[in-house]
Length: 332
Image (cartoon, rainbow, N blue to C red; front, side, top):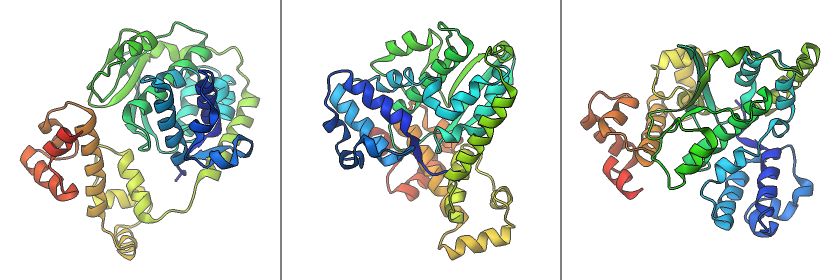
């Protein structure tokens, strides 16, 4: 599974954007490894912890509530490095989407997406987002970056997207409409963007099959470099987070991770854990996110995390977290 790191290009764009407002670099880097190492020692990727601290510092220093949107609009094809170069060599947008779905973990290892086409529209649904930054920042950055990348690829500077996000309308909602167009919806059950499927047939002027093969080979190599040996528990947690709302039974998860149920259970026992413990942990994470970032009724949240009855969900959530759903929602 990929390590949770962020491409250095995004970090450098954020720093440049903040410094462009006349803010000194030192307070922006405060509390990160870059504060002592400096940008001269920055590698190809930066830890999620450093990125989260940089974002927190940037929010405080700029007071820009729409920081995620503004950063996303600065992320063009070149910001995505080799994957952005690979996009430009594709035949059409359909091929771009295939490449993106195969290698988007190069851009955000902790992100999980689903893509489908139906009734004349393409839907890109966010199954799980990185946990280090706020939910609003994560969605703003991701969706604005996707929009800006599509505009550049298709040479459609006025392209708009339908956007749905799983949190209440923020005070800066007007900027969403300015960026994406009027088709923006808050308090959705899942975050997703969509566009007309006819765009998939759009031919790209810089198509180059031979060059694309070389770039894709490099993408595969870079993705392999991100992979690391993980415990069975961590592999299970990552998979469950990806499968939000589905929560398979233990034998299914074992099969998906290429274990027999017996071996899977034994490996978890060796790590001092059980499948039910991991499942409850992930369901608690998902429920907490819904409680803190949406106005969905408790019965709906209960259903989304696998309960048919809200009272059973309340008892389970109290057991998982030591807090009631009402306390978590009210405290937030």
